[in-house]
Amino acid sequence: MRSIADMGGIQGFGPVNRADDDTRFKREWEAKTFAVNVLSLAAGCFNIDESRYSMERMPPADYLTTSYFEHWLYSLEDLLISKGFFTQREYEAQIAELAVTEAGHAP
Amino acid sequence: MRHDDHTMPPSTLALRIKAIETLMVEKGKIDPGAVTEIVDIFQNKLGPRIGAGVVARAWSDPAFKARLLDDGTKALKEMGVGGLQGEAMIILENTPEVHNVCRRHGTNLHLIAAASSASRDQYLRNSNWIFPGTARCVFSIAMRKSATWFCRSALPVRRDGARKNWQLSSPVTP
Image 1 (cartoon, rainbow over the protein chains, first blue to last red):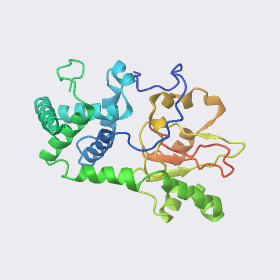
Image 2: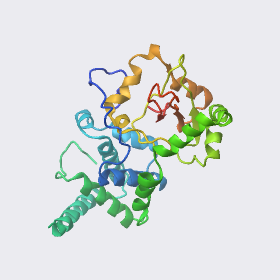
Image 3: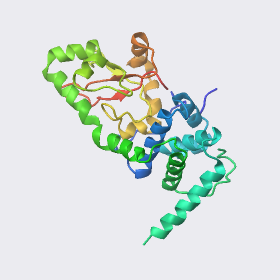
Image 4: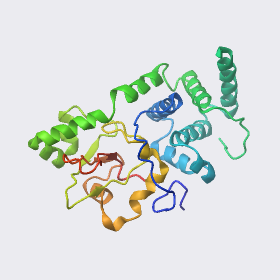
């Protein structure tokens, strides 16, 4: 079965943007997403095949409209929750808590 | 996690990864400070300049270039280049007759030549496959020499600057 991630040979996406040749992370969340992924892999939470397969199972419309590191973030959420490292409830509570904390620091 | 049932309120990307990091530290799966350390390494200590140094030496040191083409992994170690995702390196040279093509992977490969942002562009991922008849594909070469998942390859840019094609790529994985 082909997933949307298997794009080999598909045409019609328009020209590649070669002007954007910066190798650095564009945002802090991208760097963190990369690092958390590497560390989770190193800790044996999942393997690289599971990671790729998770991204490939993203809903096709989401896959096409999200950025490279958003795919990584999606697979982290998918794998860490489905494998029971933390629950969906814990995750949502943590996000809510952080949102309050961040709001408190806002000018 | 089910993403299609929309139970989670929209959150910013920054909050999402911060929440994951916090939970993983709490659960003892990630050491406190490890994320900062990894980011520092990949942001500041690794990057394309390492690969540029290897290419520059290959231009000026023919014996090194020969070793590089013969056994990339071994030759790179002479310059202290190796480690994660550099376990099996294949270096190929473009000539006026042969233009090698790496089937590029979307992953960011910071080890020698960090992949350009363009290679993270999903639209680029398909481009090498469109005209397979016109280029020798690294895939077959890599499979012949080493069938590991982590087999990487690099195409040093020609000194005459004819083509900006120095890339590190993953020829085996899709």
